[in-house]
Figure (cartoon, rainbow, N blue to C red):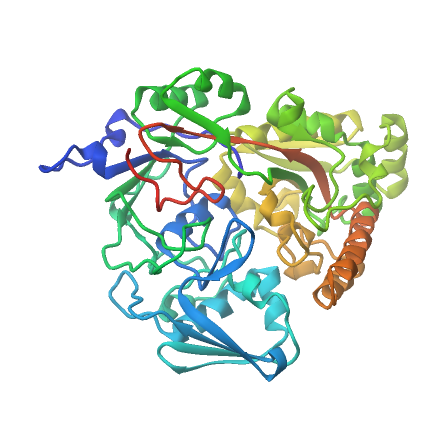
Length: 527
């Protein structure tokens, strides 16, 4: 479902669980190969999916998104809506506690919302409508608005990075631009920092104090989160061959993201289940740094958009099997309500490299070096970067190709310095299709300059259209605005839409089918 990677090695000893006298260690431990190493613990500071996976384990959410994309009460019992939708009163479930033993209180929720909203686009939009947030008592918090905000529950249940997680007030008081190092939540697992080995291993233990919701059925992030393992061990594997061998031999139980070209090999093993990770697929994006030349010029960005081939990018990402990818993809996830065909000729019309070279020169490209970042430990992103670098070179651009691990790239992309002083010009990343449903949650659609996502495009027209979407009275009006948004994206080119592909996940038949749409570690059990 998410960014694909294959990563640094670890020793065989890291695959072994701690011994237990009453039962085999393997019965108590779920062994998992993640997409990449966990380099950032703070779910607000980064939008990296690996941090979101980590956070889903140790934190909990006020509302959980179910498989029908509907928000369901999770930490709260429910809510009351008053004053024509201007006052929202929430009541927490009884018995919620953080891993340090402190009770979860209304003021923890308020502090967590405030910190999250400093960096999240949807949170910023909500807070622009907030008059005040108060906690009348420990189990209650109230949000009062200056004007209606329709997607209130969808906002509190946001799954895509940055998802809204509740942490203690003392930690949430940290400025959102400063990374937190203490991972204390109230979720079904506890992070074990003493067993973390950077580049090799991350360990979680079941939280014995966690109280799952009563009633209902588990569905994505909603419903009761029942844990059936004492420990979950993430083991970073060095390459796909090593991970595949570990899965076939039973050294690991679940591999997050085997590359598509290994799927046939894995399927031949009767001990392994291979399935599509997400029905919404993965959306590719090329990210321009709009603060510095040459991508501060819309014409330069537009010329690259008209020169690129989504088919080339997606074939590199997912292979030649047509069912594994889709081109002709616009702004919104295909097959969802806001997907449309406005301006699609920008990515579907025949390519003409000579025309594009001329357009680049006319738009003001003067031969500046393009610092392009690429992650060596993310197979799909590396493949996208290779195609991108080849395209840039064919257009006569001077590519300064910087290859590093994903964690280093994540750190560098946060820099607003000029490219020759530690900054950057361009990188590729991918998003779960869940993160392309509407303008409220789409980080890569933010175009409000310094407050935008990495790349920091400044496109007032897109900002106004996004704001208008929040005021749309019905789906028809929302779809009309979505068409205008897509037309604006193809004209201003704040990013490159590189297509949609479908990835797999694989697990041993010795465990039950995990909730792989969001890579959840509750409900899965040994069978």
